[in-house]
Image (cartoon, rainbow, N blue to C red; front, side, top):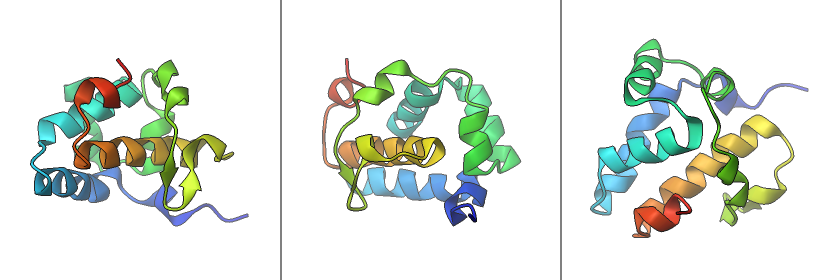
Length: 116
């Protein structure tokens, strides 16, 4: 079975869309970065290196220093699919991130987004 197209897409090519979506709703790039760091365990510096290297999504998540164990508590629908029911691990990680970005854009406070 062929890999989904998003796996081979550069994380850096999608990142500006995350930022734009957040900024359109009055949120910030800093908040986007905080969400990504919370989910993946990347430091800010390591995140910036991944963006500069134009790492693909599959590698971005495969090389994540420490995927947050609380990410399994993320629930809800993204692109018409419940994130907690996605069986393919990499796709689930991508959709977890999408869900968190959506919550940010919808005005949810960071403490709730990051399950604190």
